[in-house]
Image 1 (cartoon, rainbow over the protein chains, first blue to last red):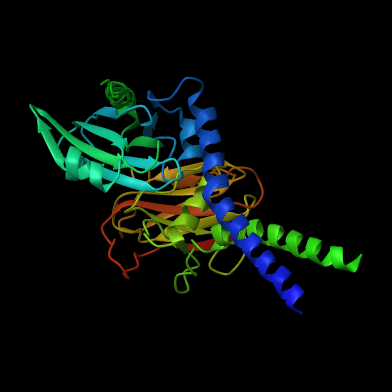
Image 2 (image 1 turned 90 degrees about the horizontal axis):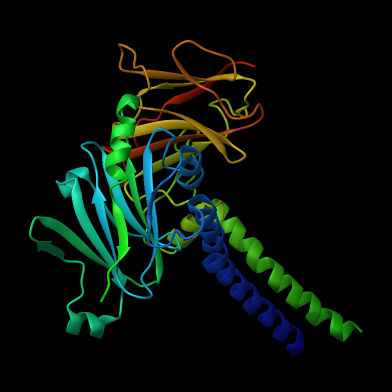
Length: 187
Length: 179
């Protein structure tokens, strides 16, 4: 009886471990692979505007008529800065971890500007935040309004989404968004 | 022999049940029960609890990014009478669409998706909107479902003005006209 209970318990523990492992790793692996296919090789820390068919596959909240720009970034070797350029209109900017957790979002009405920077860095823990002063606070430098985000993972995605009400203005809006940059901050 | 079989079976059951239960939770735990009699089900976004992990997994394992916080994502695979949505049938999605800065209706099947958004939709004088979903051309707002078989209908709201906890937005009716 005790032996059967032992194996039942072991089976339950194994099921729990397999469950958690599956939920934590397989979905993000599938998504990362889909991103790699959509963005092509050498895409880390680079901003790309997606093709219509790629964006409807990757972003369920986007249509082919929207404009979606993505930067898959890694903060393992230092902070990464996104400089966003957007035309007037309804847009949103969001930062996700590679596990799909949305850690930051802002839209046109909240930002009150169409040009801004967001710097993403690795969260070094509470003590480092206290001593280095890293936080999510607004950082105004000259004319450039910027935000800082500390992530608890090395990889993430910065996503710019814009609704284009008039298809005739799509090209013009896309040209503005293509000026956005995503680069690693040296030093 | 029996002594070896029992542990092996128990280990296999444990290893099999874990991923299967994870798949079930990702498929179902993130989707709310049908909203009233409307037949729409909401995929909850923006939750901060344990369910958020399953919600993210629901999209990520399909190679998709979860909808942003503040968006509302409704899905259904049946019309108001419980018939499956199929490409060879003419289905209308009509009524008052929710107040939102941006919405779209889309039909998806096998990874392909077609959609019609607020800027493309023609609204009637009564402020109601009717979208016809059919593979054959239909006057007015026409959405072509991908493929000829079954599809899932989605209604996505971004910048919803009804985004208040517990408040359900007005959702359109879905009727099959002919098949």
